[in-house]
Image (cartoon, rainbow, N blue to C red):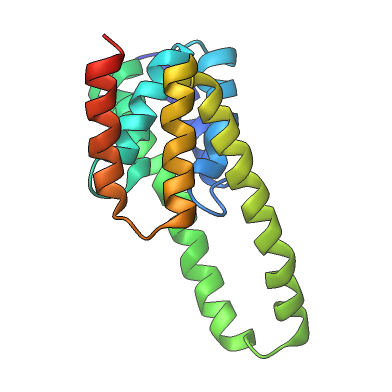
Length: 174
């Protein structure tokens, strides 16, 4: 068995519990662990994999399976899949059942109000960490800021923005 497999299991089980608010919430820690601590990927490789995962149809956090595969082949992919998606699935099942029973209690409302800004903070931190690797010059900064402005001010389909960004990248970043 590849020596990296147990470390992959520990890292991605831990990361799975940081995804409150979505996968982007875990990105800063994912970057720190996969790039900085373990050296499984470079920052550029992680950014590329994450970007492809965001653009691909389906759950965007399936990118973790690619990281497991890149690091330790098929065993790494399987272990990362189970480690990353297993704990939150079990947690969601347990909390969902409890939430239904306790839904009207005042402390549940307070808990929900407290967790919402935590989710937002984790999401913003993930976006900023991702931007550090993805925005590498004035052209990529202009693309990022333009997409942000368009999303905030219009209701344009994000798929069109992905296509437009790819086209600008093909033309301007050769």
